[in-house]
Image 1 (spheres, one colour):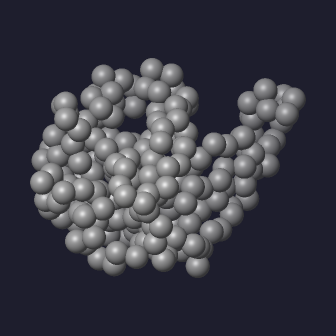
Image 2: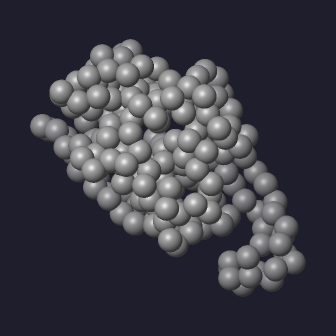
Image 3: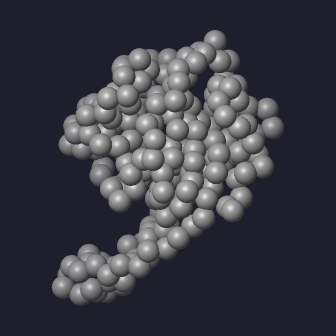
Length: 215
């Protein structure tokens, strides 16, 4: 048996970024590894310049995410001044049009567990989630939580078994742990700690459910 921390991510809007090209900021179907590490890091009070603590956290935990409710996608239109010069030949003083995607009324259940050589232990993370040092948000600062992150601590043989003990067990699960019948997927959402804004790829495993299609 293994201990799992269960989090609930619920709010009026959420935004879980994937690969973007300055103008279009799409939102992934579920929070990826980089987003979840950032969420826990905020609760723990890890500074964005503290690479050692970021690496310690990243090496200590694994995740599985269940889509309880996908919600509806919305797109917010912005203009940005002082765009990067290397984007489509624009100069630094030019304005740039951007489209930023959000999920409305989405809800996710997240299972967190410690890896074998964990430095940051689950009990410490659970306490930080209950009493966060920095304010946690659901992907962007404009996306506040509608309820506390902490749901429960429980023991289970696997992440799938842990999530099955909490709420509806109908949504698709995206897990870093393989299971029978799961479909492997490649995602580029592993932060390269010493290279800001750079990401590596990982394999995760999807177990299909009934509520993974947007409403």
